[in-house]
Image 1 (tube, rainbow, N blue to C red):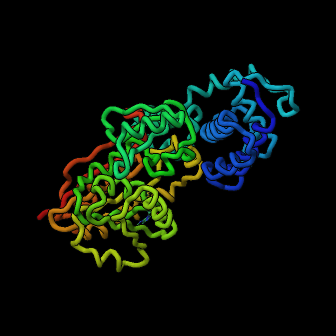
Image 2: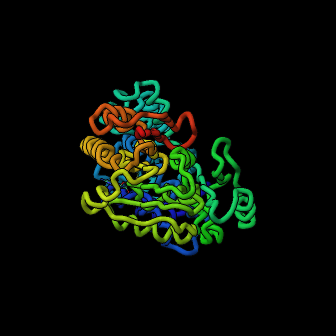
Image 3: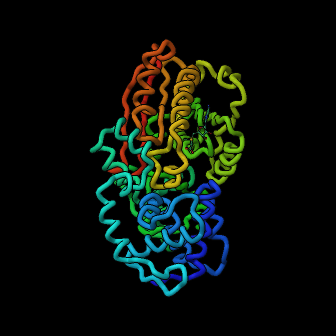
Length: 404
Ligand SMILES: C[S@@+](CC[C@H](N)C(=O)[O-])C[C@H]1O[C@@H](n2cnc3c(N)ncnc32)[C@H](O)[C@@H]1O
């Protein structure tokens, strides 16, 4: 591989913003890729993947490069040189790479590989917390899997098409995919591509959705004609899946405390041809109270630490704080306590997170079931999904039933 100056500059600019201006990596990369129309898919791939890789292994690369935060541009070039050296990419004779000590870099890398918090680049507190919750063996395997680049997975929109026709149409747009055993609505891209530019995306034939995430709506066991509440709908990835499973029949009430997220869902629903989704902002306790004892099904896709989706959001390792996790756990319990009241007797709910921490998952469900509000509910089944076992995002999904 040959390094091109303008692409490397884009990487350094992106890292500067992500590390020093607290911006989200995906937003920064999106903006960077718009910078030069002449960049082809390989150039764009280089920028995106290099930025993500250096964000993912920030602690390791900074330690080897002997630089400390806040990183200035020289520091970032040194980290870039470490990344390139470890990948065996020849460094051009640019001033930024003068005196790069290749042998020292490799020696230090070999040394740090023995220490998980450097090898996997994790803050001390997070490593400690995860070991306390999952144990050394499980966490060691899981964090290694969460540091891999995620595959691009699509969910076919059965309101518009079927998996075979989608696969054929994508192929005609030069995108090769394969089906995944155990995930009937999923297609995996054989090679990364910008699927959002395809005609079939514009026609609403699919959404990008990880395979683990596709299990959430499936486990809610919805039927056409039901009244279903998606209480933490956000931009509606799961609401759209629910609409497809319900064949557009019945009612989905998509709720969130942030109206702007729901606006996004409106656009997506139109593209998907999903007509049974009603949007409701939670701006007080009223919208919840109005639905007490009304829903056949309730989805709580709870706000969480997002530790299960680090492959997709590697900067979360650096943005997460212990206090945030403590607060979000309280929110999760409040949501379970208050929103479960929307279920009809005999109704079912799913509590899901994209976290791998038991304290956000099974322990929350247990606390709810042991509380007064939860005394009328029972756990039907739950799944702990780890990235190192499934190959997809880390998730927790619990199916809970309200007694008749
Ligand atoms: C995991 S995300 C939802 C993702 C979404 N269901 C999807 O499939 O695209 C959690 C959502 O919960 C929302 N949220 C946070 N606190 C909430 C609360 N107290 N009540 C309802 N929603 C809340 C967040 O705004 C966020 O959109």
